Every structure is written in C-alpha cells, then in structure tokens.
Picture 1 (cartoon, helix red, strand yellow):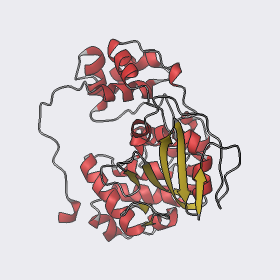
Picture 2: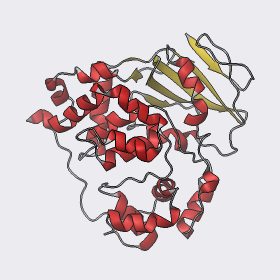
Picture 3: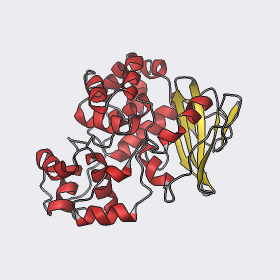
Picture 4: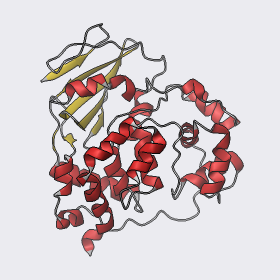
Length: 317
C-alpha cells in the first residue's frame, strides 16, 4: 500500500495522505545529506536515479518500507510503500536534517570556511533506526570498505526481501533481527565475514529491541548502550550514532585514515593520532562530526605513500 508525501496540512496514513514540511533550504543537497546511508555503489538498500530521486529500502518498526525522496519546486517530496510507509513518511523531516542546525557550526580554519560555503546543502541525517547502521558498521571493522560492501550486498540480497512498491530493480530490505541471528556459519563464510564480526552481529540482533531504543537517547548514552555488546567499540558506536541519532559531535576514533586526514588538513601533519585529532577538533566542540565531514568533503588528503591494503578472501580458507 502506498503512502504519499506532499506539503499539505493533513496527516499521513498508511493508506495514503499528506503531511506538511517546510520549504527545503535553498541548497539542500540530497546526495550529501543521505549519502552516508549508502554502503557502496551497489548497495541494494539505496539507489540514486537520474531524475534526482533518492530511494531507500528500510526495515522499520512497522515492517519493510520503500521511500523515494526528491526536491520538487523547492520543497522535499516523498512517496513510500509497504507496511513501513507511514513510519518512513512521519520521520522524513529528521531524515532530511530538519533537526540539524548547520548555523551552530562556526569555522575556525580557512579550509573549513571555504568548504562550508561551497557545500551549503549538507545536513546531518537522523534515521531513527539503529540496526540498519550498526550491522554494516560491524561489517566494516578491520577490513577494506570494498570487502565490507561486498559482504553487505551478499547478505542483504540472500536473507532480505525485495523492496515493496515500484522500487528500482535489485533493491532489497535488509533482514529483520531474527533472520540476522539465524544466518548459519557457512553463509557468513561465503559472504566473506569472519567469525568475530558475525558473532558480534548475532549478539546485537538478539537484543535488537534494546539497541533500537538508543535512537531516542542522547548520543553519549546511545553509544554507551551499544558498547555494552562485546565486539562493539567506540569506532562502531560512533559510526552508528552519527546516522541513527544525527549526532553532530560524535567524531569517529579508532579509524585507520581519519586522524591523518584531519591532521594533514588542519596542521599539515599526516602522523596525527586520535588524541591529537581530538585536540585539533576541540574548537568545534558540539560540531566535531560536522567538522570532520567537511574536511573529508574538502578533498584535502595526504598523498598516498603505500599501496592500498590488499582485500582478504575468507572464502578461500
């Protein structure tokens, strides 16, 4: 059943209807805002189409749903299908950054000032869904993004379900918590996922209801809740809460590349570690995640000194 969104002052229901949204900021960039939800160019849960639409397939508390978002005459418009349609439409403003305040960011470096002006359409999304960001973040632990994206594609397509509605071909909704917990060990192996990461996902899936509550918590409390699960540390919790809670200050630590990129951009030092990175970002307290994203968007990264990490193939073992 389809639900439609348009800026009219009536309430959305699962059978269809409309809810109001204010006009989109003049420069709202759907790609920049929703891009962090995309796990690689072939993510089966995310699609950007040539007409400017962004499609997402999500597992909501009400069930699977497909959301199509676009900008129409300066306003964000959306359609949704499936049992989760109403839930997705109700939370569309937060997804598009309505709860984010970019004016709270005050650039302290010329690079960030220039990037902030050049990327005025950046908003920090808030999905309100924990597991859909947590599981791919766990898959990205200690491996290349290429490996993690491949594992995500294999598992979602095999154990998920086709996205409801007229979604583009090949779109799938990720499995529910019960399905994640029941994936057999050999299927994790075939998806190139080692036992440590698969065990962490299974542990998280078994307490999914408690973890989903973190979406309503303050970001520090949400991270504390997630890190109660063995195998989930500061890197994974930050990557999750940035998306599920729209947390502007939750900077990722423990990353292989981010400290060096931040150090190079702000101090010309590619050897920067986590502690030094946090010192460099201290002037942006309250907005450190936004500062880090703007640094990444600036394109100023240290020159490569070594070949890329060679992807591993667990399936060959």
